Length: 307
Image: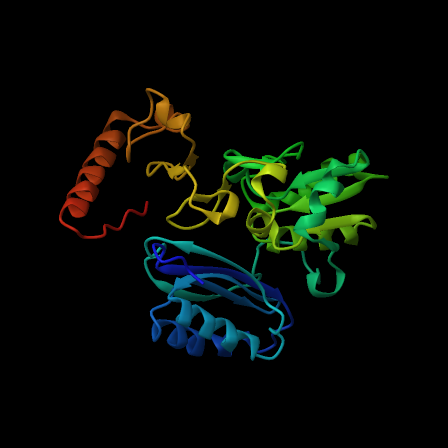
């Protein structure tokens, strides 16, 4: 249940499954969610469903029950957290070629993914000297937190991950390959790709970082920093409480507390990563936008602070 001071329940969900008629699910799902005040994004494709939504406890529970009754979607992977404010602006149900875009044809994560590893067993696996630990997220996500000893492929898009694997293929030979991501979906697809190359000892963290932070006590954790999330909370930490990270509204990069101590940081205007790439005219525009945001907040209105 959602804590009393956190009125919105957030559900990050996915399921790899063959959905031959996925297009027909779009309108009914959008109506179901909008009719219950649920906001967020759901992606539908031939390979399954993926998304994050938020709403009341009752509304989110009703949606999960509804999805579980759709043929092929029983056994959804769901991670729950909470938010003090609605973390999404609207409800979107989108049709896609892939529910997480890698750009590799003929992968079947539903049938050929790596071995699931429960959060309780993850520390032992990644502490093994024979294991190579790979963060399958993008560089901006990794920048605010990752597992101790994990490799950062420094990708800007998941589409770049196969190329990184090809470049480092020799490093994986004879090793256990353990991969992880935010909620489990990217690393599940990544394991299917790595297995398609002939590797067998391939593992991924079940439920992703979110499930690990939910279940593993902070004093036993090998996680360092916060976990980036794709909503207005920006990040979460142990126990899935909202983290300290904020989003730079100029470049959309997550910022740590240390980043915000930089003289190049100004709320809503610039950060150390984008200051030198923006002109004075850009910063003037961003400053005016920030002034409008602060005015809306002072008047009790929730501003739209997208890019």
